[in-house]
Length: 160
Length: 120
Figure 1 (cartoon, chains in turn red, green):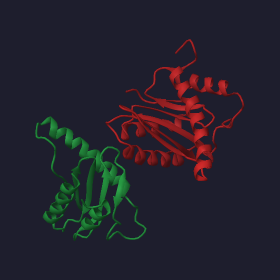
Figure 2 (cartoon, rainbow over the protein chains, first blue to last red; figure 1 turned 30 degrees about the vertical axis):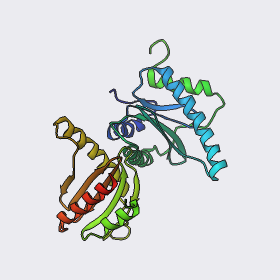
Figure 3 (cartoon, rainbow over the protein chains, first blue to last red; figure 1 turned 90 degrees about the vertical axis):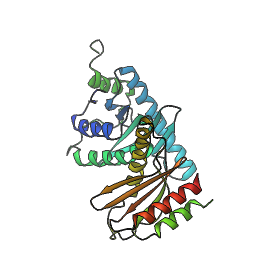
Figure 4 (spheres, rainbow over the protein chains, first blue to last red; figure 1 turned 60 degrees about the horizontal axis):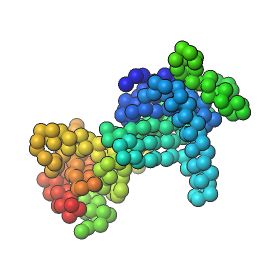
């Protein structure tokens, strides 16, 4: 399996460790706006683009669902498929929020993924740059932001 | 059949048992646990980690045992510098205990095997 490709270098080591320790097949770290920060296990930008858009939408829906059902947002989700499982959770580094979605199979377990995700969260907190890169808030240009982040991960269209 | 809470309570009362847990064999999540015994206040609570990794390890041991054509493992004992981890499978559950080095290992093993048999 290939190493993570990242749009921001400081997330590479934590992502690599999470992938290896939790035995994840694939994963994407993104901003809640849908902009990708790093990924592993994917070779196709279109797949990452779909995952970012869906994860961003699922996160927004889950938060609102949590608020309505439980009075507070849902921040972690897990879906068990017949062969593979999906884990989705929020992470933060300072004031900056991230979403992570990872896929695993019987080579791992939800318990194992959860404990290494907690370590990943701590690593993000420790390694975050003093000054976060600017422009992480929603600009309103969802498609443009997504495409720029995919260019950073896979190279510009035509060179992918 | 004993309730899971009763299984944990029984195991945690055996001298030398630091913690007893019933854990999901597939997801590695704690279903029932005793409090940590003899651990200083403020020390990190490692039960979640231990449960997830012990269940994971047990699943690998099961595969190794199967590959060696030995059938389902009856009991797993991990001996470490400062104690032991015991794991016993019971269908879709695993019983996990952390034990001090000076504990009566035979008694803990017997209690765990009995509990697993009750759960199977």
